Image 1 (tube, rainbow over the protein chains, first blue to last red):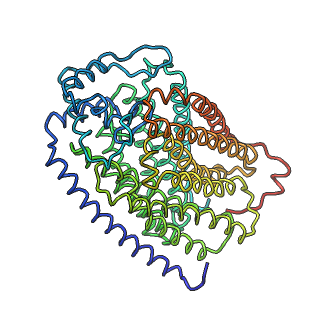
Image 2: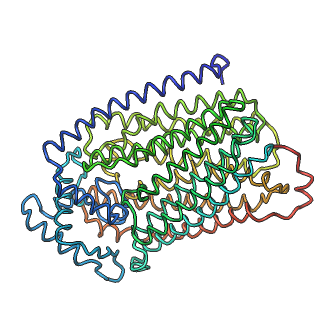
Image 3: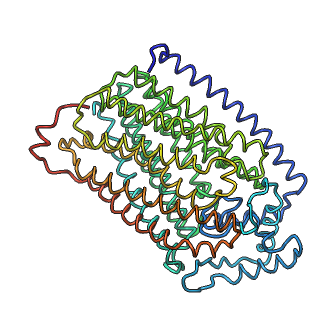
Length: 149
Length: 447
């Protein structure tokens, strides 16, 4: 490596540059936080949505499914499952279909991936549906490209 | 080995190797569940197995980093460790926390956020363990010689602890949750972990090639500059589709593309140092792992990362098997190989075993590396097919998965070979080799 760059200079470039990029990142993150808060202002995170998020976490749904593309890729994307189940046209129908699906697991069908029976109460399933409905309404820059998720 | 207290590293290396086997074993079980979905479906649901697989990986890599630091820091600082007793206590506490987490997972006790499934008390215990560790190594460096390597290593290790604190923040707003979840996950593996990687590689280059410290340390600062200048804003490639503003598509695409640079620089660095040093170090296996680490990290993290990092491409590939392919090769190349490089270098010295069990160790290298590469290819093909069927044609998820069976069988085969390779590596490190005439005459006293 060139003799013109000394170790001390390289070190100073490292510290200075890192501080610069970190400040830029923090500023952009702060701006994005205001957008995330605006999302919650337009579409409030109700106690039921928050409870639904807790149900989602309690059963580690993310370690099979994906949510906005993040998760375990073993089971379908659920960020838009509300849309896939026709929740936009018929909210009550989507809610019932979701409930029936969750209660019908595991299917026990040979050669098909098995979702466990989580014994969710009606209340919990309602909360979860509210959480998935809320999630489906977040502006994800039109992701996923197809309703199949 | 020059200082008695470096021996505490052995605890960490042993613990890391045990968890390494567990991690790959669970990976193999999960690979089996994917092709035979009824396998263990009542006993071990996929989500539980998956959190054990990923958590075991993270914990053993961290345990390895701790071990690397305990080996490296006394030698760099030219002084005994501040407190070997504290280091041993820290090890047992960490191992207990890890074991308690796994047993808890089997009983479905977890917090249910990907990779951060540890219950709150274990997260807090991890913070305590981290503080014990940081206190110990920082005190050691403060009383001893300060080198660029210890500087960068300490910065990386402090960064690991600081960014882990974001795991304690879990807002009800999913968008905020995801944003700050990446402050742990991305700023770890594409940020501060790379500082650990670069500094340990730099240490090994000094030891193995005999190149002048001034040269190595200048490279180190240049490499980690590239890492953080690109990696911090590179976080943007996770902010494309999670409710964050559209400008991240530009920032994320540009900066995460540049994240390839430090990995390329590490390839140039390691090969150039070996060429420049021209020294025949007796531990050829350790050198193989160092070079392998740089090359596999470049392909796994760099090339496979770039493959799907541009926003218009990621729009289609996000959350498919393409991501899984990248994840496996990147972790193997960057962090698994780094740890094994250090273990391979340090364990014979710590155990005072002169004829390194080299040939077997190098077999472990080639078997494991080939298997993980094959796994990556299989998952990449699966991901490309999945992307087309699901994201372009709009086919239903499970129908698409049924089309990928062949690739998943290939992945399972590769996984079984990986497990065999890992057992070879562990055996070669733990079990003393037989002294051969060639090894005896080839041995020169060298650190």
